Amino acid sequence: MSLPATIEYVNGKVILLDQTRLPLEKVFLEIPDAQTMWEAIKVLRVRGAPAIGGAAAFGLWLGVRKIGDAATRSEFLEQLQTVRDYLATSRPTAVNLFWALDRVNTAAKNSNLQTAGELKALVLEEALAIQREDVEMCRAIGEHGANELEQILPAGSSILTHCNAGALATMGLGTALAPVYVALERGRAIHVFADETRPLLQGARITAWELHEAGVPVTLITDNMAATVMRGPSINSSDGLKVGAVIVGTDRVAANGDFANKIGTYGVALLARAHGIPFYVAAPSSTIDLNTPNGEEIEIELRDREEVTSFGARVTAPEGIQVFNPAFDVTPGNLVTGFITERGVIRAPYLETLAGF
Ligand code: MRU
Image (cartoon, rainbow, N blue to C red; front, top):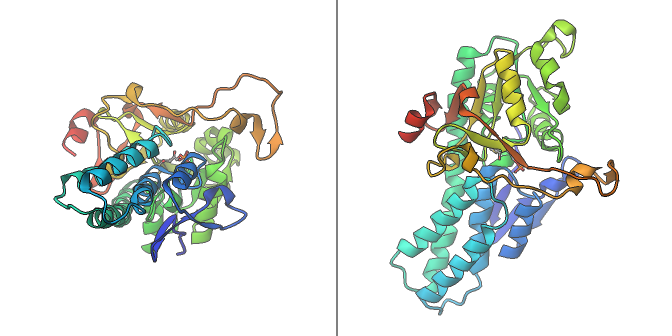
């Protein structure tokens, strides 16, 4: 199975796969400083909640690595805080961004290290630990998710996913797609319907690409085809394949089980409920935000109008038209069959089960 690395740290260099160039080109970029990392997160060269967290952690290191070794502890911590606050402005919705920035910042503050040289090494070590742990969490999500699919997914049926919560959204196997990869390792090839995911086509450009590269059977559909595909093969709509489960990722899970994910996820959840299809959300613990009581409190990123008024380079809407472009929506927890986490599948009542997580 060949899965691309989103972020690599090699010989003192931080390298990103530029996801804006997929699927036409596989371009790797060296990120020299925190400003370039901020831009890479903002324009989605690196995207997906866990990968954004990892990128931000390495961005912190890039922002402090040139501080002279002779600088004092307080000078270092002040600069670290400034870079932390700056990177935190890149995107608002994925809690992993803030989780990673705060984890690194707090580790430095809580240490007894006195020299900038030692503190820099600690920041890098923490970023590398976040990356290593993400790999492990994705693997565990994949194992638990594959076990669940073995129980509930009828032989020969498909899953449907929205946006990209695969390897390219993380630093490991992915979240929503990890069960599919683990099932493949176990000898079961699960067919995936990938929603195209307007406006930026993460489903078409990224999910379809990574599944295809990994040898997973995948069928790309536009977002408005999901209802027809879920209704089933009787109308000859989907190569005879029935959707047995939906699995998506998430950018933030609130304490009551409401969660934010790519715009369109809420509609997919409603469709799954209408068709009696189990709807799962795959998420590492770094995406569960018990400080946010419910979905209404999740800040939803609004993005540029051009993403909606054009399709790639081609303008597709009248000049000056009003546009609404939220990057994410919130799905109520009551539509979720279970959260597939690295510690197992969490089921309702979420206010209780997530609190004990
Ligand atoms: O705008 P994006 O591409 O960062 O949105 C990504 C998603 O919505 C993913 O589904 C989410 O981050 C989960 S990633 C494991």
